[in-house]
Length: 325
Image 1 (cartoon, one colour):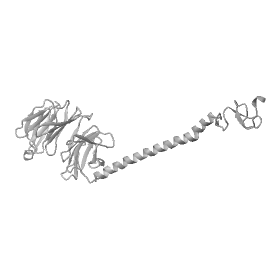
Image 2 (cartoon, rainbow, N blue to C red):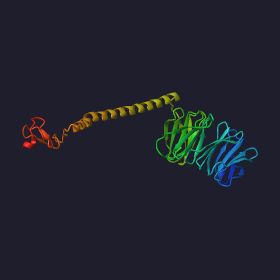
Image 3 (cartoon, rainbow, N blue to C red):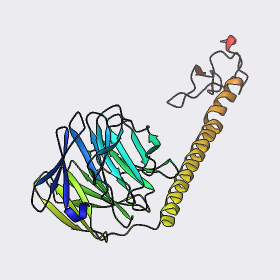
Image 4 (spheres, rainbow, N blue to C red):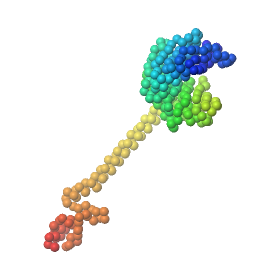
């Protein structure tokens, strides 16, 4: 229905308005939320609209009757984002209560809830195979496997600027992330590494969209510009990336072993050539050497001149008796 009528949605205060983009006419005014509508998403087949609001609820609207057919209240704070999986079988929502909820749309039953984020969820993006879900909050991007219900990866990037938008490419090979420093980072989904940094905007990058063949990326920004980027980067094969990571850990392990060996040898040499002789000499009553090479608490023998301990009665060299002086 969306493609036939060429409709668009707009959240306005508590209402959800449906516009015909050709005529600009407001076709429907959907009322139900009790606070400002913060996020809207059409289902891939155009039969449903999901909306989230500051009233902590998520509503599902039927685009044939324009009636609300489902209302969910799983969150404890403002709902920031809702998004359908590419095949429409799942719906994900993120909120300021630091949680992500995922539903199966055939039964509208909650599949599971992701709670260990510790940040307000700002945006979500599905992988094209409907398996993985990317979420961004603050300056982090985390990936979850929604089929296995497990955490996959935290994407590493330089800098501490806030992530402001995210989009998974249709071929599944890339994730684009815009930030508050006017940059766009391209991540590869084989290696999960940062592949390219796109610079050209001057304000927050608010939205991103890929071409169907994943070769072009469109970005919208607070600097009132829209830019089209030609994406021509290669990601490492997954096996090569995993092998490279293994080699890094092996290298770190070897460095640690070498450092432990060096420390052990240093301690051994210290004991053998410094500590042990000093203890041995002390046990035999041999005075230690002073800093200027002379033994502490020693004096020259009046008879032969060899240094002897001041406490010794007989010189060890000439057997001179100190008491005879």
